[in-house]
Image 1 (cartoon, rainbow, N blue to C red):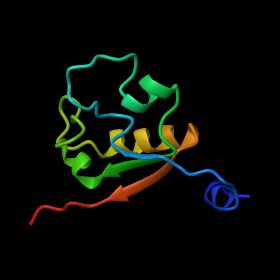
Image 2: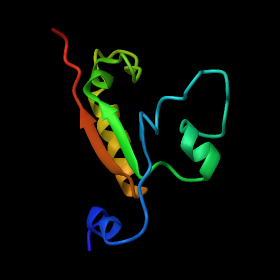
Image 3: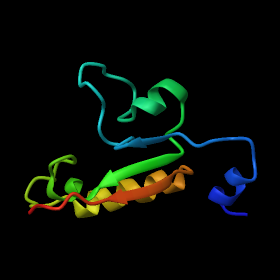
Length: 95
């Protein structure tokens, strides 16, 4: 049984958080991870959102010498999926 189907057949709900695994809220609290949710609960959120604007470095810093963060965004998504997260991808494209 898949994750979404299993939740639908249970009495549970999933909590989702945009940029949960790579963008701290507020910038003043220094927790043990790069996830506010994991700092508070010990686990990433059940639904992890990432935006294509992360690919440009606007939300996810591009590594030195690179013009984009596509590989890093993909790696974050894979890691979140391995931790049990359901990944969403939204797109805010430049006009």
